[in-house]
Length: 319
View (cartoon, rainbow, N blue to C red):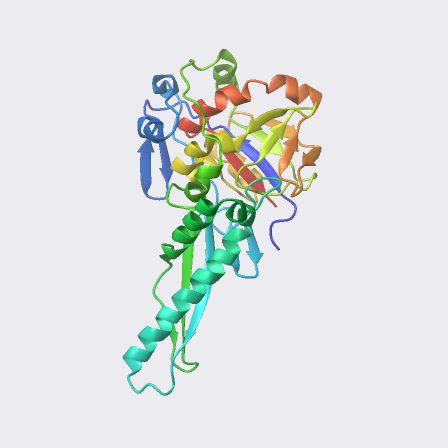
């Protein structure tokens, strides 16, 4: 598997140019004001000095292979393939191929559902646990799988007499996995307080905050948590799932070469690197900070809604 060990990085991009805050995912560009309509309302005028978030992750870079398919943490997707066999006794080739294609889709959906159930939601829970505990979650996940998009045209092998299709669904998306799990996750309260001086000072001073968990063996999950040195919960990203669902691939990214990211001009300003010495949770997806880091990062929870709305908070995992 390509995903061991991991380096988790929370990147706060500061470029200091332009007056429009935008979050770009693929070919879709969403302004901070539009994100605020579906997430927690924040005072977006305080975010206008920060430049657009970068799409740093390369799809397939950090990929986890399961029996039924692949979890592409870098590409924010889960994929699975299905194969259908043409009926050799059907003289109508076109009809036989169509029936085989339909069978391939059914198999791909079954494999995709199996793969999705293996996705780590947090340090203690996989998607399968949510589906077992909540009937509504099972129904919603099953619905998302059935509506998964097909990647490219069906592949027809006339010699083997088979048709193969590949399906894909997003991890963080209102129409994807996070949207299906929303009923079981906490929703953030409305934020009316202005950006704190600590949040503003950090963004003005540093280009990034990097949580380096490479030596600790940190694992990727949908919603990692950060604890202080005393074991108190400092930050639970599931509380901000609305932000991730709105701009998932830019809000939370998984990469394998942090140096390549930090070599980009936008990171010319030195990042703040936090070396993670300890991880927590059954699946090893949570960060435990040292005492000094705990004292200096106490502002992060209050600042996170602003950072996510502006597209300035990115979680990156690297090999």
